[in-house]
Amino acid sequence: MGKRNGPDPDGLALATTIVERVEGWRPLIDAALREHAADAGVVVDEIPQPSFVAVINLDGLPTIEFGFQVPWDDDHTIAVCMRDDVVVELNGSVLEP
Image 1 (tube, rainbow, N blue to C red):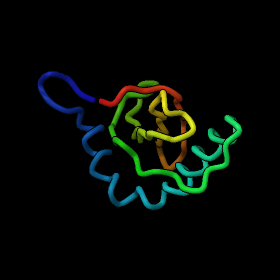
Image 2: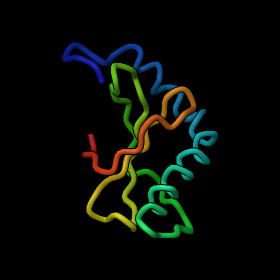
Image 3: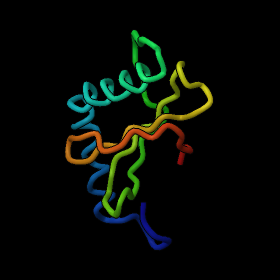
Image 4: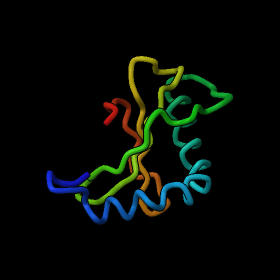
């Protein structure tokens, strides 16, 4: 997130908070992924670690995107997008940044 002359200040500020906030978000992220798996008819024992984390612009707002390679959907990278301690989107097919 940003322009050619450097990163977006709001996105950079958000990125610096990820480490301190991720453990509190993990139950929300896990629940979103378990619901996605359940919709596919799969019961999940363990949620993998994210394959990437990025700050993106979603609907005009800085948002943290966690990408997951999951066994129930091996053709796609699943993204869970967090903003203000809320899952705002689960996207079933994203590209790694």
